Amino acid sequence: MHSLQCRLSAFFAAIRQTKPKVPTEMPAKVLIVDDSSTTLLMEEMLLRKYTNFDIVQARNGLEAVQAALAEQPDLILMDVIMPKMDGFAACREMRRQEKLRETPIILVTSRGEPQNVEMGFESGCNDYLTKPIESSELLQMVNGYLTVEKASK
Image (cartoon, rainbow, N blue to C red; front, side, top):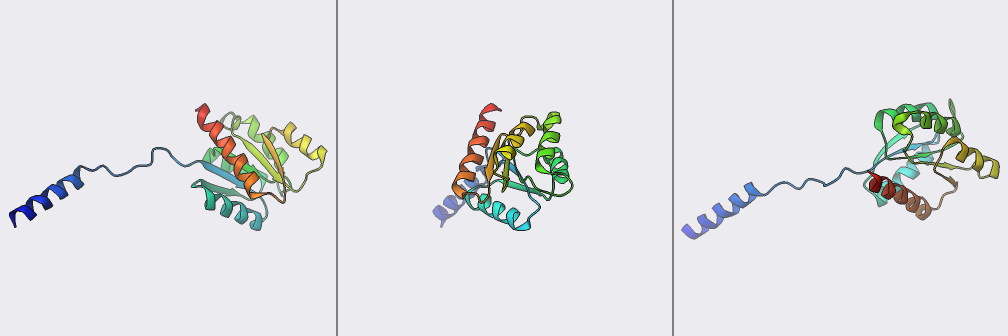
């Protein structure tokens, strides 16, 4: 009996001394911007399935700028054709903001014409994907930008 008490006592002492596991780093925060609920849901489900990112959503360019300033995401995935402020204008506005100048922005849109791609890069985006998107391509691009972002901090 005494042996059992000693072992239990040692066990509980070890538990009290064990530090709780705390994540060594915070998950990346990604802002997804699209006026389509379906697209928002699909992109969020894809990211949640393969990553542990914190996801923030916005429904138009104006909301995107406000959310980006408030949330300070590590990466932004943004549609181009949206109400109130399109993705090109939102991208330009974000690049004018000191806090957002270095945040990677990937425009994800159905507008794949060369002039639109050029306008996207001129607005300040880092990359441009045309819909329908390939899941593997999006994940590879997102992870690539977040790896570079983490290395530069």
